[in-house]
Each structure stands twice: as structure tokens, then as C-alpha cells.
Image (cartoon, rainbow, N blue to C red; front, side, top):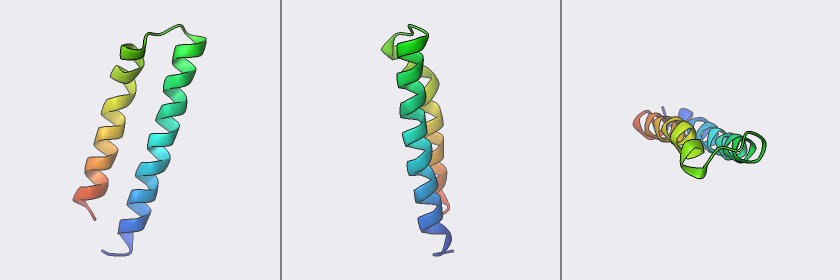
Length: 56
């Protein structure tokens, strides 16, 4: 189980970075408000980090 720990954390970091890019893209290209992009991106980030810590 210790071998899965860095992989899950790395995956969570990658997903977080990707969600930041998605949020910036939505704000710039689709004129979304900051709270709207947070509303779409934040649940994904929270779920990924919770799963990463639960299984590590």
C-alpha cells in the first residue's frame, strides 16, 4: 500500500493543476465569473485529494 501513496498524491497534484488551467480557461474564454469556475472545479479537486489521502 505504501507504493500507491506517491502515485495517488502525484495524481492529485496533476488533477489540481489541470483544474486550475480549466478554471483559467473558463474565465478567459467563456467569460465565466470566478465563483462559477470554482463551483465547477473545486468539487473535483476536493474529491481527488480526499481519495488520495483515504487510500494512502
